[in-house]
Image (cartoon, rainbow, N blue to C red; front, top):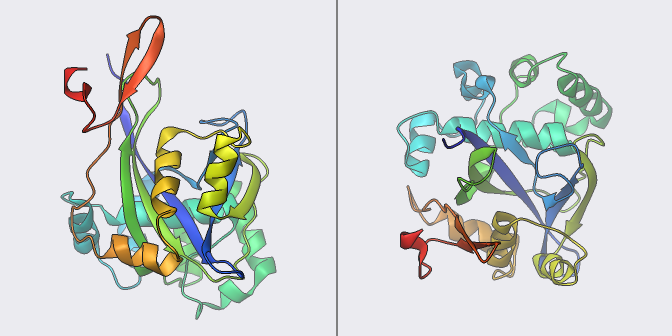
Length: 259
């Protein structure tokens, strides 16, 4: 019996670096959370409120039909964008909303609302409606789609997204689910992986390898934005046990179809 698959969204924040090139924002999961002690990007499973009509109305410049078509699903595609924004604010304190919303300029108020949100004193929908937020969904573009292998006890159908933020954008981990956070160039992250300084799972590695091909966040964003609707194929790794060790295969690799 295979585990039920839960929809999830992960957001890769990007900013231009002062000395050229660009940086991505990474976090380290605590040992008590899913994917414990691994370096990942902010994200998590979709919550029921991410699908609600009221919060869809706060999304600036994109309706559910367009978002769903982009992902190649029938409906509620916009919930993945909402989840990206919610998780990003909950986990690292970055609120991807229009700068015309006064709350964006009020760091103290943002911090208080984030704490209330993480304590479940308010919902993200409450926050959006109360502050009349315009969520910047147009600044977020899908870039990958990974499905957890059947051998794992917890399985997720995860859409990965890119989001550009201002170069001076501050971000900080929540201190509970996340224990570290930092901006880093994709090439440097890959070097740290190679040197054993950063432990990552395959989807994280493959996303960073792809981003390392670009010279700027604008170039990376434009590439994925121009792919069009339903252009990102899902990746479901498969594993078999060979001589007592798990051997993995990705779509397109020799042997994948035989697993």
